[in-house]
Amino acid sequence: MQRFAAGDMGAFDTLYGRHELAVWRFVYRSVKVQAVADDLLQDVWFAVARNAGGYQATAKFRTWLFTLARNRLVDHIRTAKPHASLDANGDDERSLADTLAADSGFGPVRQLQSREQAAALIAAVEQLPFDQREAFLLQAEGDLSVQEIAQATGVNFETAKSRLRYARASLRQHLKEFA
Image (cartoon, rainbow, N blue to C red; front, side, top):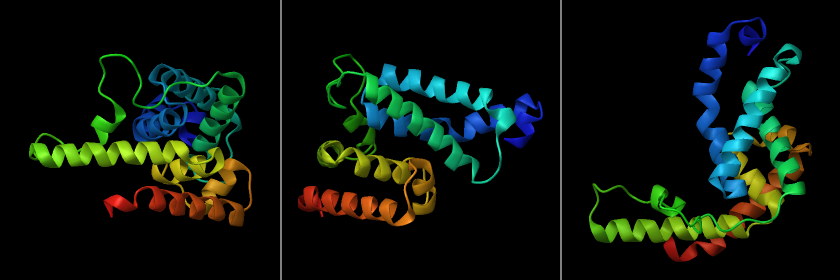
């Protein structure tokens, strides 16, 4: 990021290539609509470019990036109407459950079981309260530590840790039939 701030455009390409998919998955699984996730992702990367000159390496770049993504997400949620489920996208694209399921190298029974498990996971994540879902997705999709989640969400370490603990407990309860 510091190289990009100093004018190295190749550094931006490296950052984008390294972090784009994880940020998109975090945003997508929060808003549940691909077009909205795409727009928010674009806003995040515009913010990265706009704020490059003021970037200070006080935390990992990934933490700073996911903080930007979270802020864009919170702004969107404050102003947007609720959207359909992750699997109710209504177009010809594969559902998220299908993309999480086992690939065609497995037999049909295993694919069906995997698809059912993926759908159950999506439903369980959607049922989490926003704060718990956010913390869980920051860790699962952003690979952020508890301390980084606390920084990104503006809460103390214990609160972030508690949100993750409650999210995991709730997911375990919802998914116990698959254990």
